[in-house]
Length: 468
Image 1 (cartoon, rainbow, N blue to C red):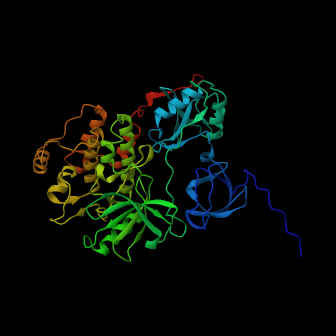
Image 2 (cartoon, helix red, strand yellow):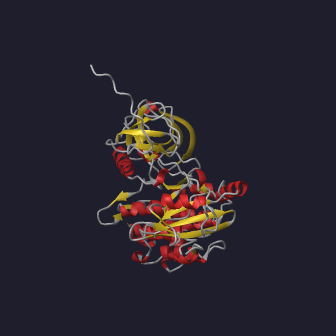
Image 3 (cartoon, rainbow, N blue to C red):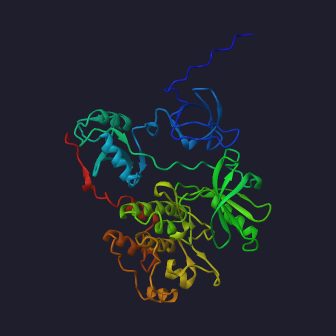
């Protein structure tokens, strides 16, 4: 027989070599644990969102979540670049300023403008100073800040300005931190497309709260993974109705939506297993840990919520109960839209409810409250109310007014006045959400970019390189 070939010496230049962007601890025997920066060879990427990989340092094999890794030579793999899709930087600015001051470093974030596909921008922080630079693209594909220095790729551009300010206010030394670790597609490869899981694999821990249909617990799946477990009170909802709700949630996957992992329906009480958000409901968070949040942070949180709702909008879904109580908060003020118990997919953009359906008047658009007609535009109205909750740190909308008074006053044209801490431009966004005619209200896509670019939407805030 022929002798065995020696193992191939894979390098970072190999097409199939990837690098870990985050730490990951194996949840099942099929998974592969790895740490940020580990290099791995992809063996099979044809099984959806979980790929089979082999770590280069020890040749261990297993499945890895594909959104936790990037090609070694790709832009995402570069440790000195933080790529974002439009919007304000996802940074905890105070802490990053302290790092920058202590280490005499500067922070860069690159942003892709989704409305102008050939536009990027670079943002630099130095203590309290913020500088924005437009990164343009030539017809031949090269990118530049100064026409005197163009580069084949963004990686080359950043590498250059890390070594030399070359007309910028500072040389680049430190990347803006990625605050949010993405959710995996399902709890594991086996469960990515599986619906029902064994109840014995879920352990209930601490009770987090109680809602209309049941209780919510912090739980542990497979003794490895923290999850949230929503239980269904016996007799409060038809099992088939519950399953329809859960099937709806399972199809929705977006960074700003709380992800459904699985259900347990073979016995009572029924469980819904979702990702765990450590800081709970936004309404409570604003009255507690988040009571001192500054307005720019609140606007960034609003942009995140608008992003999740824009995804529902593009998928023709209606939330129907958008409010701070149904937004969950994670680490670093990450916000995700939750509670799709009332969401429904429609073929004609309209969902009509029965007369005896209960809904929260103070958050409900007048056409929905009076004629029981819900559209994505009635969700936009509710989003405007949610903005007042953010600025008011969880304050009840229409303070001092009953539900009946609220409905009567709104129908006559009354709108909540501007709060003292509310910027004029933000109040204008609220008023756009409260247009009497639904079609005159902004789309969530528009609301998203207005909020994401709230502090630097004007091209005038961008600086030119001194070497133009």
